[in-house]
Image 1 (cartoon, rainbow, N blue to C red):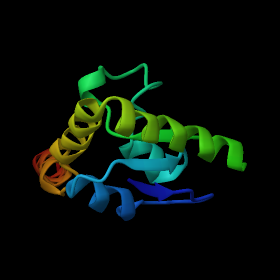
Image 2 (cartoon, rainbow, N blue to C red):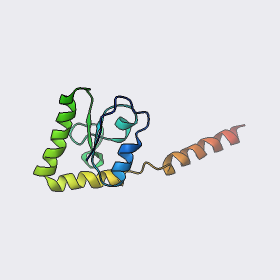
Image 3 (cartoon, rainbow, N blue to C red):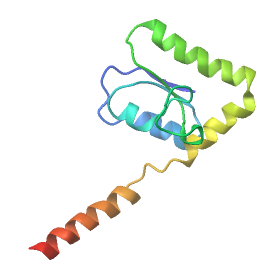
Image 4 (cartoon, rainbow, N blue to C red):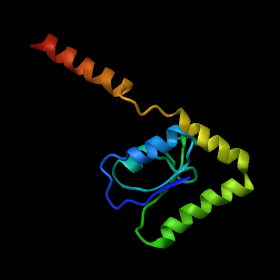
Length: 114
């Protein structure tokens, strides 16, 4: 597990590197962190197989401790599910492959419009 309790995080490379190497992130829900880590227990907009970590929002130790408790409990009580969560994180592709292709499409569209 990797804990990223940032108050401000414009990008968040730490959790993306952690995800790539099978580290389950526990992050504060700000900036790029909340855009890349999807809470295993509470993310309602994604199916469980696309969730990849734990998110907390408040800045007090209770919020961090709650997220850590959930992660540690999964590790001890359901190790196979914890392993699956780590694998799901490793499946994410945060490279420039997909955004780069979108930029090329936009530039091609502009080039052909003008």
